[in-house]
Amino acid sequence: MGEIIDGRAIANEIKEEVKAEVEQYKQQGITPKLDVVLVGDDPASISYARSKGKVSDKLGVAYELHTLPTDTPEADVLQLIERLNGDETVHGILVELPLPKHIDKEKVMEAVDPNKDVDGVHPINRGYIMSGQEGLFPATPQSCVEILLRSGVELQGKHAVLVGRGETVGKPLFFMLLKHNPTMTVCHSRTKDLASFTKQADIVIAAVGRAKMITGDMLKPGAVVIDAGINQAEDGGLCGDVDFDSAKEVAGKITPVPGGVGSMTTALILKNVLKAIKKQQG
Ligand SMILES: Nc1nc(=O)c2c([nH]1)NC[C@@H]1CN(c3ccc(C(=O)N[C@@H](CCC(=O)O)C(=O)O)cc3)C=[N+]21
Image 1 (spheres, rainbow, N blue to C red):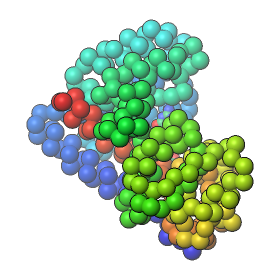
Image 2 (cartoon, helix red, strand yellow; image 1 turned 135 degrees about the vertical axis):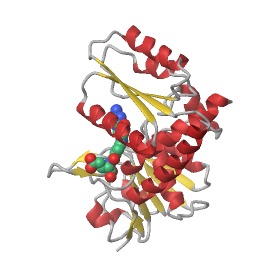
Image 3 (cartoon, helix red, strand yellow; image 1 turned 120 degrees about the vertical axis):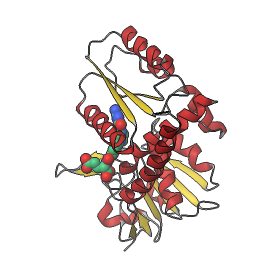
């Protein structure tokens, strides 16, 4: 049976690092601050926003949640973002997605000051991911990379098979991982004979959004398996894109869901707030 990677333990490491750095900023008279904009009443977004508030409190980061009704005009959302862009006490801005249908998501993402864009969604930050420059990068792909690096998984020259090419995880993760020199294959929902690819992988990263689609018989023995999926299981609980029970028997290392990739994302958003401060200081 493979080693189960403890995402919560790694998240706690990151939280301790962030907390210490927040302390240093406070001694310089700067209180790091994160502002979250929540339009409408999507229950997942409400719960994610609350979780960011709780972790901010714990780490000494100031947190402000701007809740707007579902029928808020797009212009009002853009105006709020403009105000936050201009407010120098605000270091990080994150707009919870999905936005109501009458609001142009791209317009909103482009409105956020790229140096405050702690969700890493502004086209400029997307560009930095590709060019390998320092920028603000999205938390979930960062979490996958951090898990690999902090678990001592060697990437150079290894074959990493990424399953998923979505805008939030797969696509940015491709470039973020490639920096560490693995040979990479990208598979996705339309890939024919997925198992023929995953069986060759030293590292499998699952981010397709299909519950338990990667099973143990699709893995090479000893492979490292990183599961970025969050799906509703039949029993009502959470499950990943990997069938954990069969995969853990074959994998060398594997992340669980919950307790893996997801448990680090909030900590990484707050780490981005600190990176954002440095960007704003120039
Ligand atoms: N509008 C929006 N805002 C988000 O912030 C957002 C989102 N959409 N879509 C998906 C990603 C992912 N993300 C996670 C945050 C915390 C955990 C987390 O703490 N998970 C715990 C389990 C939590 C539990 O059991 O309830 C764990 O994996 O151990 C997971 C995932 C936020 N996201």
